[in-house]
Length: 137
Image 1 (cartoon, rainbow, N blue to C red):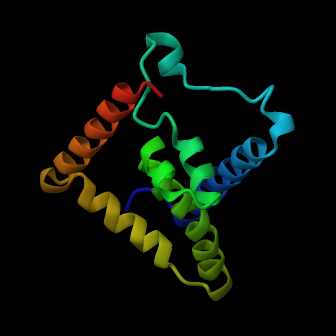
Image 2: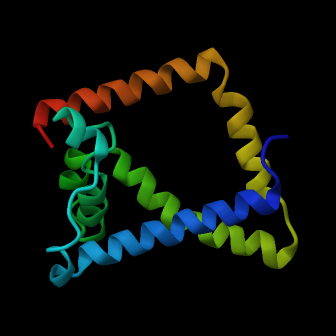
């Protein structure tokens, strides 16, 4: 099985902490002056990447603007959902000595490399990218 349980849980917790920190910096208008766009792909090419607008999407969802959130970037919904669910799931596993998140990750990892799963995901990411380019995020 790929990554160890301990490494996976630490990595997910670090990503969640970074995600929460990033969102908090964007929720405070006083910090927006020095927290600007960081998309290296957009800076290099002038085109938005598939995840451009995800922060604005999550902020719209947090403010109850669901349509605006999906219009900014549908991936924001899934990222916000992960930021909400994953820390609780990890704490549940750690406190009760379970292995459910690691098992979930292993199943996703095993299935995502199959063509029947990978191609639709690639297609959805490409559609999302086209949407970002169309609206000029």
